[in-house]
Length: 250
Length: 267
Image 1 (tube, rainbow over the protein chains, first blue to last red):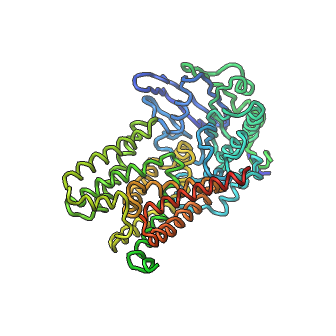
Image 2 (image 1 turned 90 degrees about the horizontal axis):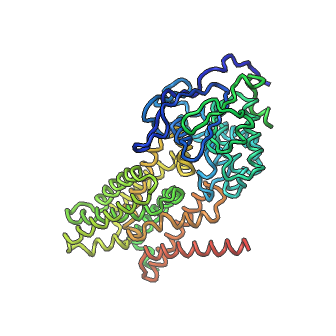
Image 3 (image 1 turned 120 degrees about the vertical axis):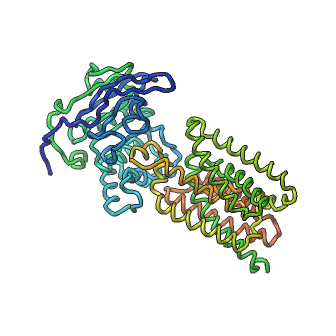
C-alpha cells in the first residue's frame, strides 16, 4: 500500500478573516475569525436561524460576505478555481426524489467540474465512479433510480459523488436530516472512520449535538453568536499518514 | 391519402420532426427544474413579437424570436430578484406578453387572421424560410445540448452542488433559457402558442413514468414526441383535423395509456 508521511498537517484549508453577513439590515454573522487546518474535523452546530447555513454557503462561494475575507487553500475565494478539491454533500432534501437519474449517473456528476467543461465521460471516469460506488458499498444498486432508494442509501450515493474526485476537503450540510436513527449512526461512523484514516479535512453543519459531541468533544472551541464550532484537530488522530482511500474502506 | 405526398405536407412533416426532436430535449430540463410554465410564458411573448412583425412587415418569427430571447433574459433577472418566488417571474412576463400582444392586435386589426394561425398553429403553411429557421434552431439546440448535457444534468439535479463544483451556473441557466426561447418561438407555427408547452412537457412527463435512467428518459421523450408528431400529422391530414391539436391530444392519450399501463403492471 502506498503510504507517505504528511509533512504538514497545519496548512490552512479554510480561513475566515473578520467575516460578516447581513440579510437586509439584520446582521446574521458578525466579525467571524476562524481557520480550519488540514485534516481537522470541524462541526458547526447551532439552532435554526443561527446562521450556520449562511456560513456554509459563504464558504462554498454561494454567498458573498458583506464584510471580511474568505480564503480556500490559501487563495481568496473569488480567485479560487480548484473546485475538484472540495467534495460537497448537501442535505438529502436538496434534490428532487423523483429525478430520473440512476445512482451511477448521480455519482458520475461529481466529476463535472469547471475543468471538465466540453469533455466527454471517459473510461477512466467510469472507473473512478466504480471505485466510489465500491467504497460506499452501493455498487449493487448502481443502476437503480436514486428516488427508489432508502434515505441512508441516497446519502451514501451523495457521499460517493462528493468523494469521486478524491477531494482534500469534504463539506457536509446536515447530512443526516431525514434519515432514521440507526442509519444516522452508521453514516456518522463512516465519516469519522474516513477522518481517522484518510487525508481529508472535514467541515460539517449539523443540528445533532449528541453525535457531534461524541466525536468532537463536549466543549466548543469557538463561538460566534449562536454558532458553536466543535473541532477534532489533526494531531488528535493517531496517525497522520496518507492512506489509500479505497483500500482502507473496502 | 394523396395529401401525405403533397409538398406542404412534406414540409410540415420535416418541420414537425425537427420540433419533435428539440422540444423534449429542452423540455426535460425545464420539467426537472419545475419550470414547465416557462414555455407558455415565452410563447405568449413570442405572439407579441409576431404581431409586431406583421405590423412593421418584418418576418414575424424573427421578431417573435427576438421577443422570446429578451423575455428569457427578463425571466432570469426576475428569478434572481424573487428567488423564493420563482413562479412570479413567469407570471409577470406572461401577463406583460399578453398585454403587449393585445395592444399590437388592436393597432393592426387587419392582420388578426394571420396572428390567429400562430395562436393555434398552422403547420401546413410552413414555407421554405420557416423550414430553414426551424432547421437552424434545431441544429443549435442539438449542439448545445450535446455539449452541455452533463452540466445541465447537474444544474437540474442540484444547482448548489453544481456551483460548488465550479460550474458557471448563471451562464448555464441563461443558455438553457435562451434555448427555450429559440425552440418556443419556432414551435408556435407548428403547434401554436397555446399548445407549445404541451410539446415541451408531455413527452417528458410520459417518459418520467417509465424511464430507468436520465439517458433513457431523454431518448424516450424524443421517441414519444416524434411518434405523436408523425401520427398526429397523418391523422390530421387524412381526416382534415387541426394538426397542432391532434398532436397534443395524441401526446395526452399516450400519457394516459402509460399511466394506465403502469398501474396495471404495478397492481
